[in-house]
View 1: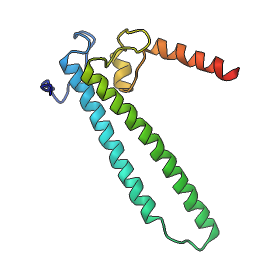
View 2: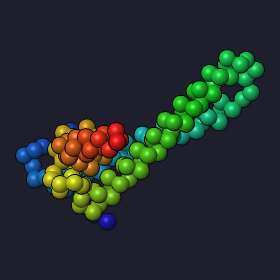
View 3: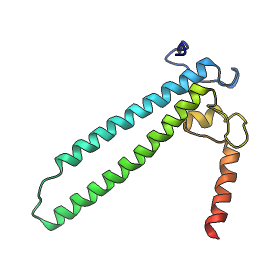
Length: 140
C-alpha cells in the first residue's frame, strides 16, 4: 500500500505545484472518501426512514403523500448508488495514477474542475464536446 502524503488541514491544490503530485492525489483521495462516507450515511438514514414509514395509514391523502415521499427517497437512493460507483471508479484512478487526466484527450483536468467535481473524467472542453455529440445523436 502507498504511504500517505502529509496534508495540512488547510491544504488546497495549487496550479504552481506539479500536477497530480503525491499531496494533490492524497487531497483528492480524501475528498472522494469523505464524499462516499457522507453518501453512505445518507443511504443508511434513507433505509431507516423507509423501514419506519412502513405503517398502514388509513387516510388516502396521507397514504398518497407517504408513497410519494417513499418514491422520492428511492430515486434519491438510486442516484446515490450510481454516484458511489463513480466515486469508487475515481478512487481506482487515483490508485493507478490515471486520476486528473481526461479520458478523451489525456490532458490534465483543471484543479478547479476536480475540486468542484472530483469524479470528473474529462476536461471541460471535452465534456462540452461530448454533450454536444450526445445531443445531436438523441435528436436523430
